[in-house]
Amino acid sequence: MAHSTMTSPPQMSGVGVLDKASLLLGVLEGGPATLARLVSDTGLKRPTVHRLVVALERLRLVARDGQGRFALGPRLGDMVVEARQDRLKAQAGPVLAQVSARTGTSARLHRRRGRMRICVASSEVLGGEPMPVGTAFPMKSGAVAQVLLAWEEPEVLYEALRGARFSAAMLSGVRRRGWAQSVGGWEPDMATVSAPVRSPEGRVIAALSLSGPISRVSRNPGHQLGCEAIDAAVRI
Figure 1 (cartoon, one colour):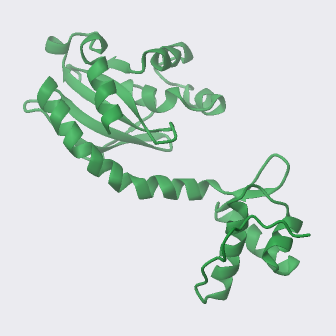
Figure 2 (cartoon, one colour):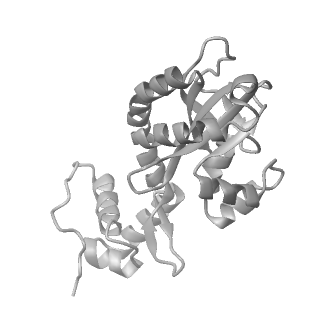
């Protein structure tokens, strides 16, 4: 007996191959499924299901779990993140401006893209070295990289720590405090504090940073700016 997970009839586009792919993805919304389950729940022929699900797998719209079952693929999650990005930047703009004005620091929002971190929004303080939106840096040093990596899975951390200027112990400290700090880097005379921006589900999706002159925020800026960074990140 079929045990379909689709609770309402799927919307149809009128384009056959797309509608069939949509049926498959609709089943997988309910969790991983075997090929036989996909055939049963969609009513499509087995060769058709196999051909489409393998094609979706190549596109990373479908993946396999540890038992070899089909599941929604990582590209769908990436699409969700991208769809949220414009909303995230719109939400971040006023917060960055406010915290920059209050602290006298350059406030920026950064996203991770593979092995790089990218500035996606900023509110710059006068007199500082501006960081244009779109500026990218390797994930090997700095407070922002530490925050973007600290809550990652162990296998991701293991690979990321190769050649990095921070250690697993330092990332453990970041998780404990809720912020990271660094001195120098993009701006040699500046110090930076960074805190995680999380999705509603608790996943770290960005890092907020506050940067100011070492002469003013000291070489241990976390004590002065750590709470400000966390508060601003939570508001975003």
